[in-house]
Length: 394
Image (tube, rainbow, N blue to C red):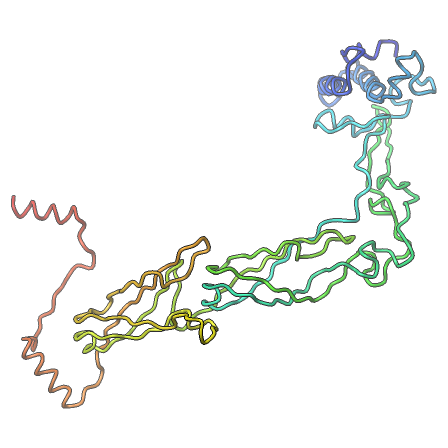
């Protein structure tokens, strides 16, 4: 190859590595045999690749600039020297970092130390605990650091040693010949599984993994206002990673049990009270429990465990009364309401005296033979009522 290597790549003699790399990528896209199978173009591609192989390596480039043979053996022609890495060709198309020295730059050995996986555990709590918060103890079965080897994976008194197959690189080169010359690809070393080292005497407790499974007890603080599906994150309380790596996170997913009195809708609580028709007609005062009554409190805590609800005379079945600020506290502050729905109960059985009194009341009210009122199940809109009013006066 008699042509100047800098001229082949179209760069100045003082071009830096990035400029050389960009020039090679541009030419490789134009001259690669998969793009242009012409024999003359293929030969040009070999020369360009050969030039890049020299100029991308500082030592070979220095030897070439001094007028010497950068390969030290006087080989001529692509494919007869040290060989050009298939990785470099792929880098020209996909923008990777080309290797130096004709062998390609590998990824290096894999680390045995990796972050552990996150863990998920489900916790069922009561409605009151979800509303006001609670601290719970959890028994968690996860991977923890092996204390025998401190996560190294080797038996006490021993240590990992460099792999003789890959000499600690974690990768081995596989060479194939093609019309392009020698194409080398790097693959993880099968002997050490890409770690670059071998544990000659694995720890008996963890079998070389650096971690063991153990059951431990954690205390998790559930904030006030959580709901079904809320997840509480405990940082670094999940699985310890292989090789004693940092632990993942533990997520506690909340499931709220049903309450015998209250039903939750967002931050509002709903309950239903049933009244006899006489109480609904005459009015009464009811004593209802609060959600705080379910929380264990001291005798002098001053927490209100019940309240009085005034039922006005003539209350109809289905009436709702909203008690402001008696619902569930919000995660971001504030508190929902308590919505009390009234159901008026009609007596199923009457003794003769009760029946006599009811008939007397019906006679007094002129209700011995009521005809009933038939109404539409859907209320008219404001515009509908206005339209009807205009029609009546039209």
